[in-house]
Amino acid sequence: MNKEKIREIVEEIVKNSLKKDKMVPIAASNRHIHLSPEHVERLFGRGYELTKLKELSQPNQFAAKETVTLIGPKGRIHNVRVLGPARGSTQVEVSLFDGFTLGVKPPIRNSGDIKGSESITIQGPKGQITIREGLICAARHIHMHKSDGESFGVNDGDLVQVKVDGVRGIIFSNVLIRISSKYKLEMHIDLDEANAAGIKNGQLGEIIATLSPNQVGGE
Amino acid sequence: MNKEKIREIVEEIVKNSLKKDKMVPIAASNRHIHLSPEHVERLFGRGYELTKLKELSQPNQFAAKETVTLIGPKGRIHNVRVLGPARGSTQVEVSLFDGFTLGVKPPIRNSGDIKGSESITIQGPKGQITIREGLICAARHIHMHKSDGESFGVNDGDLVQVKVDGVRGIIFSNVLIRISSKYKLEMHIDLDEANAAGIKNGQLGEIIATLSPNQVGGE
Image (tube, rainbow over the protein chains, first blue to last red):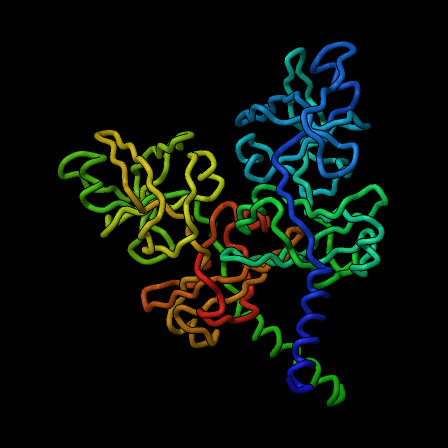
């Protein structure tokens, strides 16, 4: 084997290794709801506590046994999974397609940014509430540990582009980087986005570019 | 005004003009069905002919007054629009999301390429049929006139990348170019793709790259 050939092989290995390092597993989130402790009681009864059904990929988060019904002006969606543990404010995450079913227009928002978002009625076995705001369509984002951020060369709050291969190949722009010592590396998209790219759970996406947060506008 | 400034302005105008020339209006297709003349009669009755409800953007194509119900192993979808005129083989186009509702897996296919695609049962007011194949999820494509192809520098069968701006900015890969003297410039995507990119009907996409047909694999 001559030097040129060896150089080619080494370059290929390095390229593949670098490429591998920017790969992120993708998970599609179905519609779900986070409830405040107060709303848990109003929907499921005084003193009620959520019961864990399944651990989620992010530490301490779980899918609860409990489900609710969403009621909008045009339709209902049953069996919407409650995620636990109960937390500060109630937040409902649906796809834009779900929005059509319900007859509401959820804004594209980062988790927690619910101010002025859409109103929705939520029905549980022991009660019904209408939240003035809290219904959103979650903006695509990547959870990662600090060490991932370092090896990827990205910072919390960055917006990146992620490439997904396949017949329905897509490059997602404006993917928010969320870094915490508690997070495990995973990209979250909704079902519309997963279907549009023909993605199966666990499929990998590749971070191909970093945009700074101020390169994109608001909604 | 000095020469340098004039040059800058001229360059800007030329750039904008070129950019404008590669813009394509995008239309989201909801689920629909094309029926063979024989299947029109089996679903709607002997001698029945489809009635035009609305002209579509491509010449001679129309949305018919008639609708059917799709019946899959897991669920039904009502009010599925029939498109006319009746043509060779029956073809049903749904989104992957619709596939989950029905309990079937439509392959991503170009229109007309139905060999070995998914089976589905179709119910009309006068009868019910089950097609062995014909249910697909339409691959994204751009209809264009020959003159558009010339000015865009693309050929029939090319696969291109189309960039859509916005909060849910996306670059669609593997967009098939379909050129005919009968076609009007328009990109067709399904509802999953439209929602994933937050697209409104008539929004523009920009052709940013051309891939050759043999750079991508089959399904």
